[in-house]
Image 1 (cartoon, rainbow, N blue to C red):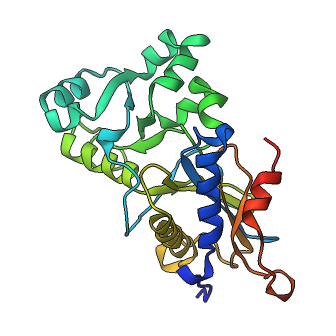
Image 2 (tube, rainbow, N blue to C red):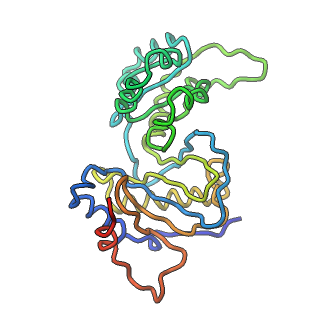
Image 3 (tube, rainbow, N blue to C red):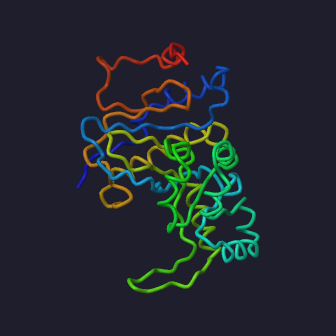
Length: 277
């Protein structure tokens, strides 16, 4: 059983405040809104299979987004008639999903510059679990090289397939809506075999510094708690450091296992100013 524990007082509010202040004053950072935390496990690697499937991290203090705040693309298997008709009849889901595209149409309609347009058109991509494994080859590195637009897995219904059994096609819109709410309001991580995880903790325009720290604690507790496996409890040997940054900013230490000599206070504002964009 892991005894590793980080509390809110262990995290540097000053680092987060300096980062957000710099984003508001530095013209080169004014379009940076998403705040990420980078968890470093030191010499001990996480060693998870990189399967391109985002894992949800439940947040208890504040939600990151609401489904209505983001433009959602749903990718389904062929044919899509049953899904389109069910979604069209349910206004609560119809308002959330901006477009439904089948794998077949995705291959046929979106190539080259059109794939770039698709990337910028939507904030969130979700895909039927039966076709998700096909998407790395179809969507390519633009969607899968980072974590920003990597497609999430959803199920179109609560049906459980038994071996040798053929399921009837169903579309449970209430279940789809519940999954979209979970994806948008919570944090997530992508499994990898390295010693770092990059996870979004908030948006400068939506969450306060306190909210972001609370989200960071939720994330840390989930990832280090062995009772949360298999989704959580993946960090088994403690955390060496945690940094915060935006897309183009310098990284500032939110937490360091080893303090600086004589507990010397770091000048975070100076570190940001010296960072070369």
